[in-house]
Image 1 (tube, rainbow, N blue to C red):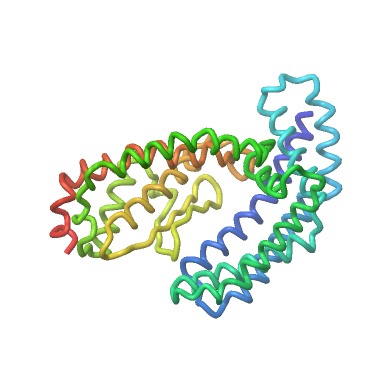
Image 2 (image 1 turned 90 degrees about the vertical axis):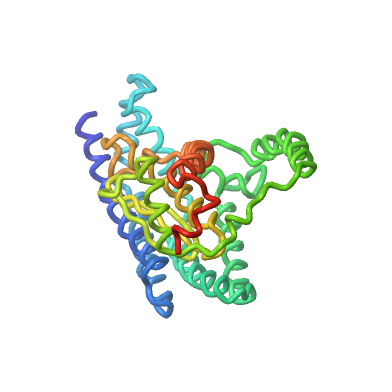
Length: 322
């Protein structure tokens, strides 16, 4: 059992290294890559994602999981090893239903679409992006069909993020929340509008950058294991728990754009920087519900209070950013 488990972790480590290399190319595409390089980058990422798929669905992986599955039946089901094998087997079972050719095409098309979207956004030209998004919708529906039959076409996609959760359950959550949300909006709409003119003044980009860094440093973002850059839209990516990067964007006449983008991505990064190191170079520590819960509730709730505290009063910050 122990030797087989070491083999599984070693194989998963090799797979994760390729995943990290692909993610690094994705980060570079959105932060540094010249606009005309999308086609080449799509082929590079497609090759790496195909290699990941081939290793993750290999006969070696299947044999290891079969052997380990038999061994963990006598173990505490809540032990790290038992849970590890259970999740690994679930991922393997899903992956083997997806052809490698599909993985290659999806990686290629999504990479090209990313650059097309950035150009369309910059030029306010949706028709430039439209054929790409239409192609991606077709591909995602094709992916869902690999797992037919299903109750809803989104179920197989949702399962990639929250295993076992069904679209109908999510719809019920929103249905339950809707009356309260409507009542809240109606109540707010009847109140006097809050003064926000101080947010719509001229704010120097460097001042916003420095201020954002100060805020997320207070949160605990580890700059020795991360960095921040600019991109068309904020995102968080990682190449292991010791290299977790975030991006932000700026609007020189609206203060919220950068500071909330920076704080939101910091929330994702804090989750990844603070996972137990024993899960490094694996995909066993990812949990999208917890990821978003930390970002939306904790950072959203306390971030603006910290920002106000550090700045003293945002009503007078315009002078500090000039």
